[in-house]
Image: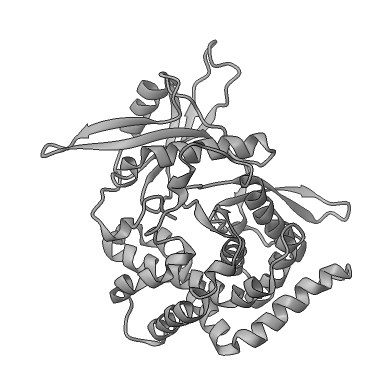
Length: 376
């Protein structure tokens, strides 16, 4: 959702490049002539879908890209964003459907551009990735088997990243990064964005329970690098027809590595479960299918499993509180910022009303059913 550390507590400037200015950037930084450009939704950076004109020199290059312009706060973390680019390239080489990173005219993966706003000069990091085909899974009805596959994908991602080496890997220890699940207590600073109602009471309970029941268990969780944002708009799927004529969806793209940080296996599966619940007509059932897929690669320990319910509630809380806070800052971006809130509060309330024991029973029995080959 965002790529700076503790960013929401500090002043930063979201880029506001026009389409003409973005086209000029593509030409000056990457050397491509733009034939068409259109803005894409973004949380606190700026993205454009770029079509380039083919020339003799670029005949074999892709024709569609995403131009990504980081906000002023993220633009001060060049090393971190460059490493994200290297991770994207590493995962692509390992067979994951990530984008290719476009080189600048100076043969770099990123460029800092300065913009004179009259009173001051602001710097924005610019990079360009190949545009990936497919539709966000938020737009399709996904089956239990596809939820299983997405859980499996999340685990494979974390497992593969164990093999990633980089001299500045320690930058992924992002201690005050609001989107790392470890930092749920930092939400207390943003509670003013919520009205005094049941939603706020639930979030306050989640934060307190997190301090009492999760913080004390962190040393027992197995650490890894997390993607940290496998939401229903960051996973793309392509459809094909099965023998019976039904649509079968295959993952065709994994987007947005801006929230990567050191976390734990159980964080990744909790985040994935939460986001797969958002658009589901039967959200409580989702967790068991995602968990089964994840555990087919990385089985959770008993202590990790015991924290899963509260971690899913915690991610709902992070997303809902920070969306409300960001809406106060950027009311013009409300439609995009409030995607999770449309159903998220309802799902979080339902989980609390049912209680941990009842939800866990559904999740764990569903996951167990895959062992016998009979998925529920």
